[in-house]
Image 1 (cartoon, rainbow, N blue to C red):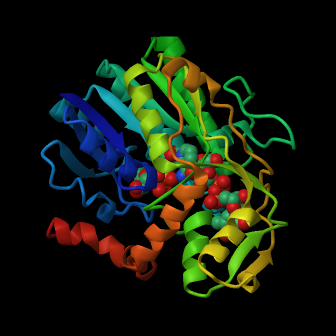
Image 2 (cartoon, rainbow, N blue to C red):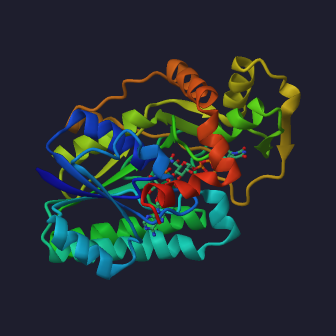
Length: 336
Ligand code: NAD
Ligand code: DAU
């Protein structure tokens, strides 16, 4: 059995990771540590919650006493650190929690992992640490780190720390830097679920600036398969970019969603731009493709339609988020 501490496993990518991996691997024992911020939703883990090789622990990655206890009790040998404050707009409104969780929290995990001589620490980072691209070019692993938002600067700081632990202590760390994910279970503050849900509710679709900001979209399962490969075979001390070569301006996705839902483009509302808004992200993922034989399996054309359909079919899921009811699931399940 591989005893794996997955942090932030009640969020979008982490819950998709756990649900996916527990159907593929019965040699993984997953301990999910998540403090259930507004972005954590235990309902996401319904497919996994009764599995023998899955345990949920509500707690903060910055709590060293708790993290120490978990390492001892579950004999943790692997860490996948998804836990983060992840939304750029929120980081602009208030940055402190971003540095507390994304920097200090990661430091707690690293220190305790080091003392416990773990076999691998996978840090889930982001392409946003590279800053913004002009019209041409792609982010490679050698692109200088140049973050622009409080969110991306906190992720970049964590990356620097993770690499310092490799250089100083030879700790077995690997960093992944992925582009924008989409798919089921994404919190409806992010572009794609927000636009789908607003359109379904005939509400305005707020488009920042001129709508021509470019993101490079990847289906969440493709990202998670890459993470699992990195856990297994990623070379220690290395960084792997992950992306599906699917660049698109925001307005194109928004119009595609409206067209599929047969809603009028009159719902589009151009609003004030995000301060410091990065113009373009695009990933060169040839390193992970060449070294670990990973490649994306989902095409945007089909996976975006499946994603829109998922939000149509799961109105109760996002309805409970909008009403706030989703936060009761933990109390009901654990009878507290
Ligand atoms: P999310 O916001 O949906 O989920 C974050 C999870 O972390 C939540 O369950 C939350 O409760 C938990 N969490 C927050 N602070 C915590 C703390 N102090 N202790 C324990 N748990 C805590 O985020 P996501 O979109 O699933 O992103 C997961 C990771 O992937 C993040 O590290 C993010 O930087 C990175 N990433 C995200 C994307 C993307 O497009 N969403 C792309 C690349 C990288
Ligand atoms: O690139 C990876 C990153 O992608 C992750 O590290 C972050 O955790 C994740 O949140 C995401 O960051 P973005 O800022 O790119 O995602 P967001 O969905 O917030 O915005 C995508 C684009 O859409 C961006 O150009 C801003 C724009 N936007 C967003 C919202 C929420 C709008 O035009 N209107 C909106 O209402």
